[in-house]
Length: 255
Image (cartoon, rainbow, N blue to C red; front, side):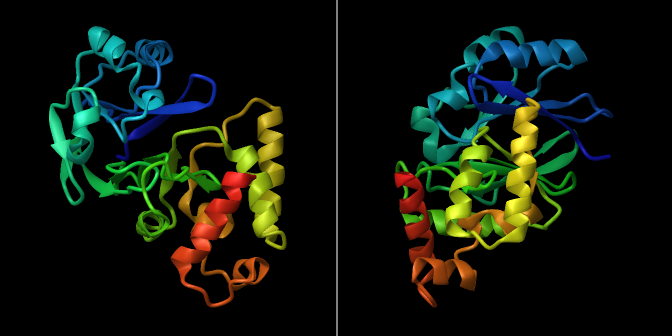
């Protein structure tokens, strides 16, 4: 059976996630923006936390960890490359490593770009990937530390996962991302439809995360640097894809 995934709104626009295996009772938390809503969700469901998976060191992904561990002690897993600025880790992991949650393999992907040492966690049996601030719903994280070629390589790695993969990203930025995406890819009917769906969801107070990888590939301009219409819109026909991505990211930074 696939793991049960629960999305938990935190802070003003962050998301944390629980992944739970009903057979074993194993429960993993992905990122810890703040303690109260996460502990409340665990308590409501009667789940005991076993693992905490940290994607990167930014405060809005780790600040709740101490208070969570006081109530729900768990094994903390994060990137070896980021260990010097993460909370203390019980297991340091790298690209290509894997570990189990409830008997299901969890694969570690290096998706540096937003930060150096940012990792994603891919669970192929459950068809879900936790991407935090690398690939986001209709967007990608700002390049605080990495380079455009590095981030393009990370996004390309994620785009190569199966289309039915559920993308659990770290923020509720989708509505503003949609407004920007339409300036880059205005003739994309799937994007226009998605933007309208997002507006309706947000008006109703509903989350727009997670999303499907197939939908991201069809509508997210940061995955679509090779699309001829986008290249033409940017005046970058047949340009190097990392350079096209860099131009899209630069425009988003100014948006």
